[in-house]
Image (cartoon, rainbow, N blue to C red; front, top):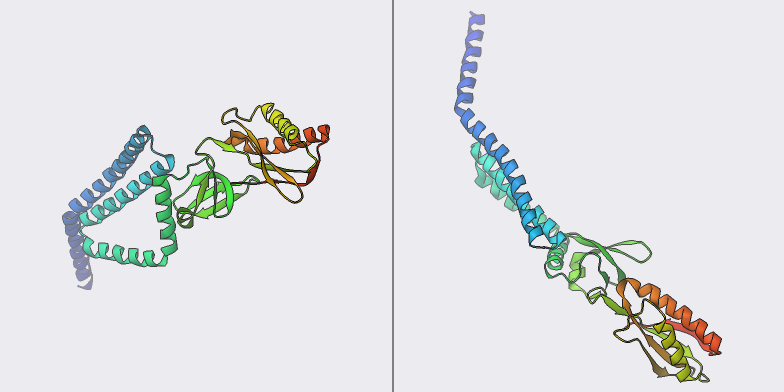
Length: 274
């Protein structure tokens, strides 16, 4: 008798399970169909969006950011559609997401500031990858613009990370926008110096340098007369990538030329920037 009751119980459970499975299977099948089709649709939409942005010549950083935002929005929508098709109530799920988003936002205020700064940099483009900039007291070449930080590569090959929040709100000097840059150097010469001869020597040095531009014309002027020296300002123009080479060559070549002509240089030579 007990064995028969056990068999009947198993039979009832089995029949009930099969009935539930048959009743629920259309929802389950349709939900997984939506999931599979949605995954492939998201991939297709992402590829098409990237192609459109490439054709429109959008900035690579902006294109990548927009593509990432698009794919995550589509994934969230697909997930909500999937669980909704399974019969799960989505209103409470959306409320939970909203509360979680608020909590995360309050705890990550600094990161959100950097995120907003990254958006401003990407949209308004005060600089781009490859530009040489000065910001927050450092100078370097922009190697990557990320959503939260910007990476600079300094002249001595150090990688510098600047948060986009303070970067977007600070002063940025972009040395690459105009394509060329002026070298500003000052020689301090003794008062016994023949100024006309010294200027001719410097002009000759600059004319003979292949990386100094002819236009704008390089200048040599008397910048100041101090108690101890005559300050001779040297201002040649060059391409951005040749700035360091030209600065070094001018100092070296002018010193050698002055020594050949017997012109005395005061105990210091300094560079200035304006």
